[in-house]
Amino acid sequence: MTPAHRKNQSAMRMLGRQLGAARRAAGLSQPALAAKLSVNDETIASIEQGRRPLKFDIAERCDELLGTKGTLAAGVMNLPEIDQFPLWVEEYMDQEKVAVTLSWYDAMVVPGLLQTEAYVRTVLQNRVPAYEEEELEGMLRLRLNRQEILKRKCPPTLSFVVWEPALLLHIGTETVRREQMRYLREVAELPFVSLQVLPLDSPLHAGVAGPFAILETPDHQTLAYTESQRGSQLVSDPERVSRLARKYAMLRTQALNIQYSKGLLDRLLGEQ
Image (cartoon, rainbow, N blue to C red; front, top):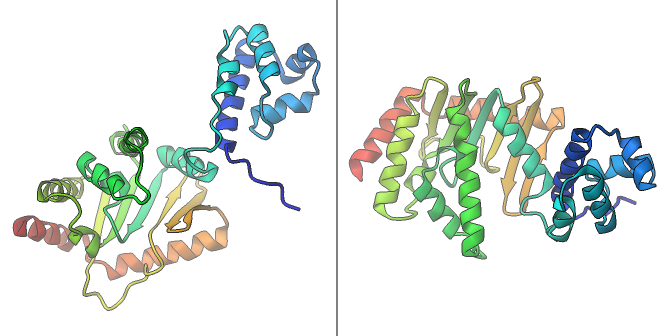
């Protein structure tokens, strides 16, 4: 039987990492801390890896032993019942921060890494059920923070294919749309960015199954990420990643080339 997936697994992993960092700062090995707490060595390893929850009584004793001044106990008391994001989403975002290359196909909206703040807010405000205001602001900040990879000293090689309807969507005010189109046009000039538009009248379309992204990690592992109405998924299986890579390669041949795509953006700006 497959064990039940904990609803706050990534929060547990974060708290476990905090415990591990405090332990190492105190100069203790996992067995040494386990001995001081009179628990099994595997218990400490499991907690630090996020596989086992940190109990409040152990957290209090760790705070005393490691000099963390109640931080771990407070973390246990405030551990969310449900993660803000599934564990695989957080793993993808971690990999995205350090990616060497990133290829992204989107069909409904402008890719998240290329969205202006006003456009992000408009997209998030269209969510059903609606976000609470505090939650919306948190999601907004998270999406904008992900865009820091565009400002890296050595940025990744970025390729985007966007289906034309995403650019024609009347979402938000005309000011929001114009600002977004203008920003896309500016990003299209960056030397490490390739932006292509798949035109609405194209008779061929390899991306009808929905949006996805493919990234290459610093150790040259290739991962993919997909989203749908039913949720998101991190894909690491080589065969499935290969299928998405072939789809993306086909999308690039079906889309307008870079120069024609810039011309389309210019026309859209002129028509607004």
